[in-house]
Image 1 (cartoon, rainbow, N blue to C red):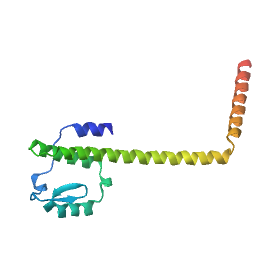
Image 2: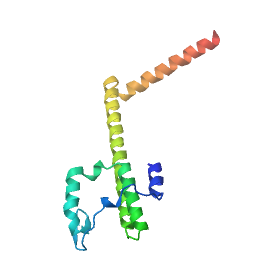
Image 3: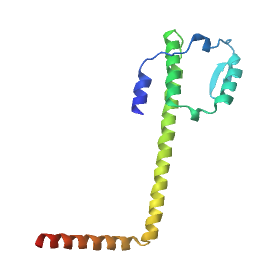
Image 4: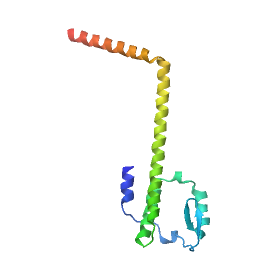
Length: 147
């Protein structure tokens, strides 16, 4: 994650050609949480339907988009807000991954706890067995020293 954000903060340039971009009129309309050129709504909806939700985005996608936005900023466009959004998107993506890993770990802990309850339903039984095991190891260690 740290390496990703170091790369995110580094200036880079897109390998995409200018023909990948569209020009739209100045009228604005709402699309998701954004106010975008009205002429681009149809294009954005088609992309949304084809490529799905933002949860499917990878680090590579975000870094590619960041490079395109940086080029546009170098060209004089005021797209800094898009970089802020991409950073928030990346934080959200990593947060979801960490949360999923945490849930998996919690499930493993619960499974281990259940298995332990099957083996020793009373925790005091386990403590007694552990103490007895430690005592027998001490005796054998003492026996080894005396032998």
